[in-house]
Length: 569
Image (cartoon, rainbow, N blue to C red; front, side):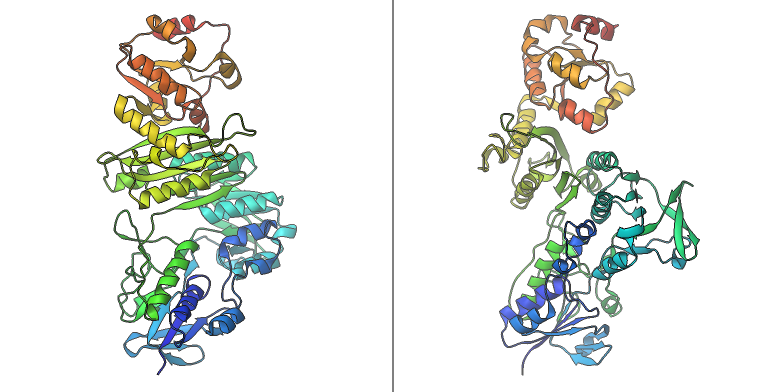
């Protein structure tokens, strides 16, 4: 008798599981149930379809039902919803009948979360942005044609992508985010950089904010009131806050789950119920760094988890070891990427760590259109293992984040980074790639004792009136063009050795340049000449600007000696 494998759910995990099961067992009977008319489509492409970057709805359709039927001999049952599972009988009950299974793969995904908003139930002109049905409603409601003022709830990956793409087609877009920055899974400084880009492009951003209620006229939302009483004009409301796992069919039968309802699975994607596997947005994933079960609702993991579940349900032996929060998002012309831990998660875990923040060019200065990368790397103080990285920039973010992600998986250390053999040619990288530079900076700090200081700490020292010697080692042309940090003494690097006698070696000294390299060189000069307490501003003046540091106009009529006297007095 043939083994019967039932798969519940389409999109990515379900079809991936079904196809892998067929490749593993040619003779098994494989049945896939999907409650909608669509078996698989690219939810992550919906924001780009709104702007026409993806110019045909059909391009969002990843797998057609007939492909699964004809190429993989899978019995695809569309518009047949599973309404109950009876694990003790190995039985699935649908809207059309009941079916026994030998193995069951649960890939029912997640449903959009809609926060409680007074008046929303009475409105028609709003939608989630999660499914192809949502996309169709948005188009049917004429959002692209005659809705001008669009409010997006949530400034996570989907929310930011939706805001950008609607802005590009001429909409007045406002984003409302409960956290204190957009893209809050990143460190706040990177969220602030992204918010600056959004606002420069004309997107209005409300952080630390919620939509409390909506005003309704003739079943239509015309405005909203935020938690602090501010009012916003709304022609159409979109929600992109995230999802809640659709797992009630199994948690009601005793399946183990995380607090959010995601089914807990092992590396074989087996749930706590016999012969039942789970994958996709309804299932947990092991966090490789912490060893704990976690929740990472990403298409990459859905495909890998589905593949693993399908192989094992069909008699194979595969594992999906887990993930560690690697993500990337486009913010207009910029890219923001991350992998692993950052300060927030490491602090919660009580890990002894340090970090380096720096600015590095993505390509050489002699090659046209050079741009910068803003990079922070977190590492263990115990063994210098790379724990996480986040990068913001115009070009080359994806390449470097993937290298750091690989370094985390391989448990590489700061000392390992300079030994990586990374591809180099002027259109793609500098001779010293930013990943390699991260290793140099970390190792230099450990060897010389010259540490970096963050923008936030320097701002606090200045704000608190802490007496420091702040030295700007850029040249005068740079200062005239870009400005200076308040209270800084300008001593160009090339003249530093000749002016050592006019500086006070007993004072706490902070040095900065444009990106950090000249600041480090200056710090070594000062260190070798008896200056004891030395700090180099991480990311230099560019990092200061990117994080909103206050800038003074350079007074070219003042000599550096006059500035020094004023600072000392």
